Amino acid sequence: MSEMTFDKQYFANCLAEMARLTEENRDYWTKLDSDIGDGDHGINLSIGFRAVTSNLQENLENAEDISSLLKKSGMVLLSKVGGASGPLYGSFFIKMGKDDAGKREVSFPEFAGMLKNGVEAVQLRGKAEVGDKTMIDALQPGMEYLDTHKNDDDPVKVMEETVSIMKQGAESTIPLVAKKGRAMRLGERAIGHKDPGSESSWMLLNVFLEEMKK
Ligand code: ADP
Ligand code: MG
Image (cartoon, rainbow, N blue to C red; front, side, top):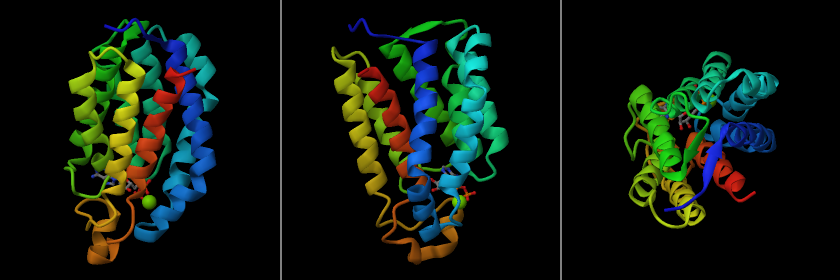
């Protein structure tokens, strides 16, 4: 069993880094969405994460545990982002800490459980299955691997493999027809394009890995 632990500051650092990453990829994610959607995915997430970071220090100080920090941040995403991705990413952070109330520190297996809860919330809200050409195509296979390997000796290695599986999941959306979201309307014209949410989701969850290595 690994000794690695994750505290409130770790999660705040991740949120700040996700906001930075979002600014860096704003145009890229928006370009992907202009191919098969309405061209606002990067803009939506930028609005959301800017709002999250503008209250982050205050939320970090006021939150008595990890789950309330994540919940507050998720509520901001949910309320500030206009597109479909706002409620989905919002639910992800809101539900991440649902089994960990009161905890100021979690172990790697607990952290893995939090990510799984978050992805389950996305699935519950969006009702997408793997193969529907959504962020679930990236998130779900990663969570299956993570759940099986959460007690392995090397958490960084487990997260590296998890992220790599999610990245492959995003690639796997390219040849698909969309069965959920705006891209559905395109029918076969969506073939050949990567789903924007699958790309943003593996890249955002990669931040959890990068912060583990610091
Ligand atoms: P909108 O589609 O409202 O413009 P965004 O452009 O911000 O919102 O986000 C689009 C992304 O949201 C898609 O690429 C897809 O990954 C994700 N998405 C849309 N609908 C669903 C759903 N029902 N379940 C999971 N993900 C979804
Ligand atoms: Mg869009």
